[in-house]
Length: 295
Image (tube, one colour):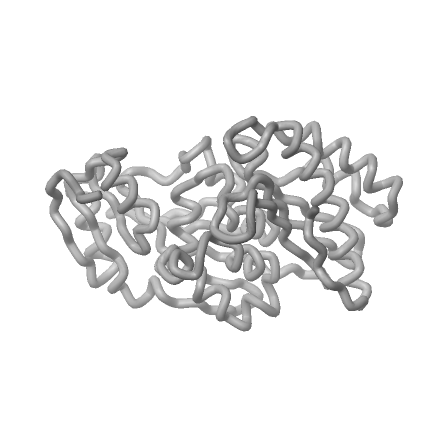
């Protein structure tokens, strides 16, 4: 399908240049990095920007660094680069696992973590990991910079707290202070390129604190804070898991759509919680674990 309207195209060489270009027409400019969502939306006339600002040539946006227990991921870092990064594989396991589930290899070679959170679809795979690792999003406009907690980032389906004149520069994640183990669980309709029917990240710490974050079971990805609070300080056994599953069901609000019914999504979320807690707890205790399929 061809693109049916004209627009200006600019390839920014620096963050300041990108911000300046955006400030000149904030109402109808779009930032393009991977473009895996944006180009489709333009071709399908979902959006019709006057200006496209290409940020792929900005050097800082390709950086991944780990210092003082903080991981920093630039705005142009792709999911394939996250998959290939040993620091992320060894220290931020949920993000590493989630990256490998995003679409296809071809899409992961172009799609960026920043673009994923800016799309803000309820099923985005990266969100649970960002919640578990207390991510922060750094944004900049022509006047100032600000930092947005991932807890405040998603404001609705396909909506974020990013302003029209702001650009994301990087995302940071915090390495847990205590010894932890974690996993990411995802179920699609088939093996391969599909959106999540349910996605869940689970992180267990040695002091019996638990983090659970979900996607595709509500208008926005979120932490399951009531479930976490119930589990705090408790052993992972069948009785506690069963009660936690019932609490989780009250914290999510899945819909019925082409991929799954709300009842099925609720059931699968409960199954994921059990498998995620048991797998993470076994990993934490040093057991050799083979990740089991959801079904």
